Image (cartoon, rainbow, N blue to C red):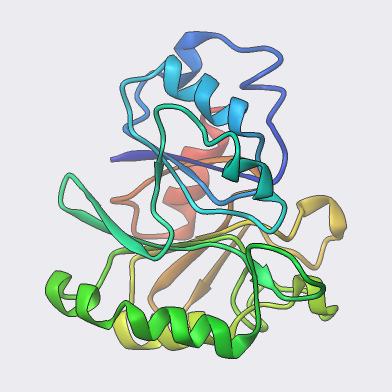
Length: 212
């Protein structure tokens, strides 16, 4: 399964210089948040692949203009071709507003998922907006990651963890790819294409560089 992960900034490659052929071979599109709803609707129009998303901390406009033809997976488990995908959007709370959570609030969201996680026997991909704590996150409160995500990964050992929020332009300390235990960690900033069946960093990065 070939997956296009996107987040944070609308990719000029896909939007400003779009050609339908650029989505050839893509089986699933996953948004990790902070993208204009019209951008997601635009991509959904030109592909038969499902477009699924979680909210970023700047996605309050979705309340009035949700992306057409797309599926929100926040606080849910979406299953596609047998792959179980868990969605938990939002960022650390740094001022009053929607889609921002304290660590305790995120823990409460995770606890509410216990029955779904039990029924699905876990999950294969964790999709969030914010990163996990001290795993490619920032030290400032707005970009600090959640410990709750590490707890989920430790318990269920998903194959992939996709996040956004930490822009690659912020500095070289933020990685495009990392690995935590047996989980491949991908920063979906702008766009990133990978194969779900890939087993190593080399295989994942070959897929990424192969679609530029």
